[in-house]
Image (cartoon, rainbow, N blue to C red; front, side, top):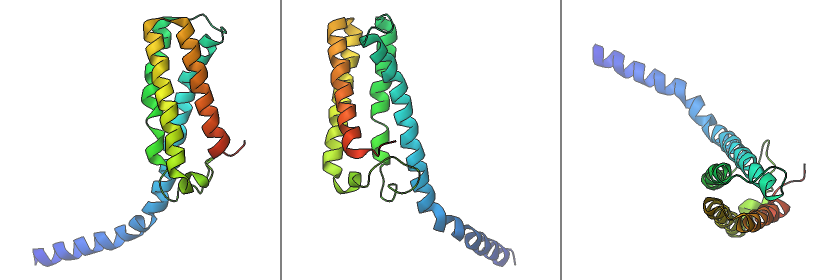
Length: 153
């Protein structure tokens, strides 16, 4: 009798779980949006600290710059795998053409990531002029992608 009960219990558990599985694509899309927004927010916070140094709003500190640049480099790699199909809907500033121009979008992401690495290298070297230049190039890369693929707020 135990195998029959166990089979019934398993069948009941599966039946109860089916509605949750049916909702999982929408939940996955919602979570993808939240994840990439969080990654962009954190990257922006660390890059903002770097931009403030590059603009002379705060004194250049090679250690602080290196710490922020290293984090910004790592964070720059996170959001792009979360532009999954269907995540163009919902609470997002992402324009739908991200999914129709995937190659162009990914190329812009790579340009920004490569520029962010140069910020990190300049910060580690303590070279203020190279740092300022790299921050400027990274800012241009960010703006280029925002101009093409982000809804205006």
